Length: 317
Ligand code: UDP
Ligand code: MG
Image (cartoon, rainbow, N blue to C red):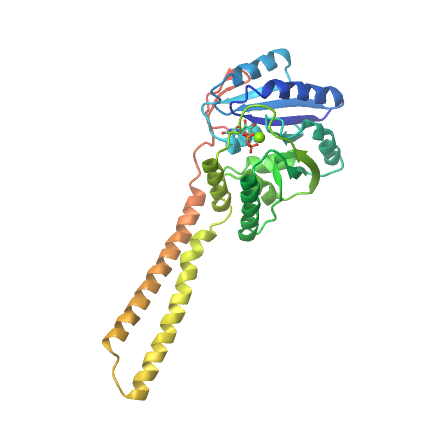
């Protein structure tokens, strides 16, 4: 039997977990020709989340958990899910039932048809403020403009990916993470399923605007170093203006039989040196960007325990 891993990052979700547990059991009972592995990644919750998860596991061995040493954020929690998942495919899902588990049979069906990455696209966004809808729309637009790979619109992290996508993502150890763009980067055969995103079942959203802005900047900087190219781009027009001014002054001196005047010389010097400065800054920026890409040697996360066994966190990834 094929095994489906369901990866669920959880942070202070004691209120929604009982609902989720019911729903997952319901789905698993329906899909009897598959093995299941529910993999909770407890992202340093401060409430009773981990106790609840442990109680699920006591009742049902299909429930597994990775317990983080502290809060590392949802993106990293999902990375841990990728590392620990043992299934033939994996489904990412939020703990608050905003990603309705009822969609799983349809996703699995498409997976069986041969798709590697079945992602759920929202038809409309209930329970979200106008501001959040607007900003997320603008963000997609900007991200799409500055990155060359195609990014799926109105798509959260709710998706099913094949084992080979899991293995591909496992190798991507960068610390500025944006899974959404990583899914795009790996490519493979994608399939869209539509769904209505309901409001969260209980508890409060774990995101605030500051966190969202952070995520947005990570999304851009982890994908491209193009902001660093601004300096290079600025240097080019500076040199063009300089060149034209030099020609103009020389021509003028020849025609009027005069010497270069002091103020003209000053302008020339300023243009010349600022041009060089900006250019050098751009070059430094390019190298900085490359160094920045390379210096990602820290472990992404530290695990307290996995299914009740203390993790020593010796290098294994
Ligand atoms: N989450 C997490 N770590 C965090 C913040 C959130 O693991 O630091 C989890 C959270 O428990 C939930 C999912 O990520 O399962 C999505 O969070 P939330 O529902 O608060 O985000 P929203 O749906 O409002 O975008
Ligand atoms: Mg949510």
